[in-house]
Amino acid sequence: MSRQPIGDYGLLSDRHSAALVCRDGSVDWLGFPRFDSPSVFGRLLDDAAGTWTIRPAGAVGSADVHRSYVPDTLVLRTVLTTPTGSVELTDALAVTDPRADVADNGAEDPHRLGEHAPHVLVRRLRGLSGEIELDVVVRPRPEYGLIVPLLVQGEGAVACAGGASQLLLSSTIDWTLDDGEARATVHVAAGQTVGFALQHAHLSDPPLQPYTSEQIEASLQTTIGAWQSWSAAHQTYDGPWRDLVLQSGRVLQGLSYRPSGAIVAAATTSLPEEIGGERNWDYRYAWIRDASFTMDALWVAACPHEADEFFDFMAAAAAHGNGSSLQIMYGIGGEHDLTERTLPHLSGWRDSRPVRVGNAAWTQPQLDVYGELLGSAFRLRDQLGTPSEATRSFLIGLADTAAALWEQPDNGIWEVRGEPRHFLFSKLMCWVALDRASALASQLRADDRSEHWQAVAAEIRSRILEKGWSSEASAFVQSFGSTDLDASALMIPIVGLLPGDDPRVLATIDAIADRLTDDQGMVYRYRTSTGVDGLAGQEGTFLLCTFWLAQAQAQAGRLEQARVTFHRASRYANDLGLLAEEAADGELLGNFPQAFSHIGLVNAAWAIHQAAGKEEGAVSR
Image (cartoon, rainbow, N blue to C red):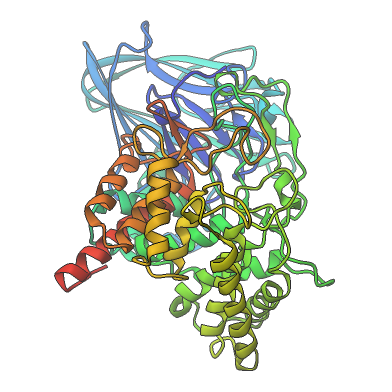
């Protein structure tokens, strides 16, 4: 089982798939050619599930390590220093193909980042000083470690055969091949470079052709340039915590799937919410909630010019001929069936079983999704412009469905695997759906529906204020008739149902800060004896919920409290600015990197920036 801390990993993305690279130079997670594809390297979840290591020879861990992203990119640079010398390891999932025309790559258009990504992992060693000897071990294990491939040495490359894919490892070094593993020892002196490229294609595709050293270098440089062009064209935020906010914007962009416009909740599956526990879910899918919130956050951190692509994807993926209610999540290609299964041959991260692929939550009713989509459409109304007829009909249908279904119970934002309830957050987001749809009525050419939407929104608001407030808890609570606190109640001022300084909002902020936090001031989603989902054990604190608290405090005019709360959550970002879903006992837990956490960081920073600007009389983006 893997024991490396989750925070030791860095993200690579080509906007088709993702890789995780550990501080020690090992690639321990990679799925080709999509985010949700079976892993080629899966040591993150089991030592036998494949890895690609590049380490100083002789003594693992003997090197001093410093790493960072190449500025304004998701290209990772790691400097390894030993007593004999230092070497720079640069890693990227290529977003361009050096053998294609620039126009075909989309490399000159920052809005087409990753459009024709060639599904290649590029790694390059460059000597910085002295001389260093490194052991390189490539151990692919396709299909979540089930396959030990046959490796065959060819001219300039090693072919990996086995399963439904073909892999080709290009390099000029001499390999020793044994038992599905390629090994080599390389000496790198100052000024010398050694390059590698691992290519992927389907078994039915034409045979892969090796990359030359020049093509490996060109692939790396054009990928750096493409990411920097995207950042220059999209990222204009100039407020507090600027580096963290801009990095979060790049992470969120890296979690988007370029072919469809979908956005995954995280790059991984089954990293646990509790070490050794069973809350281990597959997050490599497009939750409507997460994706909508991501588009909102990109409005701050990256100016999402591609908003129309996201809404067109949602309209196409959610299309039904029978008037069915909206599914809460989809595959990144628009798939509906995400049937969940377990992989019993994998031990899980730190023995946290089961490892799951697929996600059973796709069958759950969750009414909040209507509000998240329409809230995002309202936020991005300028970028959306005149929506396509499919998107227009889709958004109108969302509002009509929210108006029809809002009184029904559901499984809520936390996807409880039990009996549906009347969750406050679900009602709140139905109110958002109708409030925002009414504001968008002219843009949607739906003025005839606006009066009805406004009337139902008023009814929902009245019901929330009557049944969502608990005098016993002195707070808005998790569900109607309950006294349990839930951090999602902090969204009441954030979405504008009540102002931030309303006495009931202030009481809820105080109750959550006092009774729903750990001894470090980090916020839990909820707190009951067995958890809302009915599973035993205690999960960690939620980074998103802690950022919500900071955002609500800022909107309440409690700026100093908001800054302190923001710092408590943001300090969990690793040295690359990456966050998982949860934090416990000083380390990150849950799938990684997690879109929700980065969304929370961006929105909280923006809210604090806005509140401070109001005090000072000006706000810049």
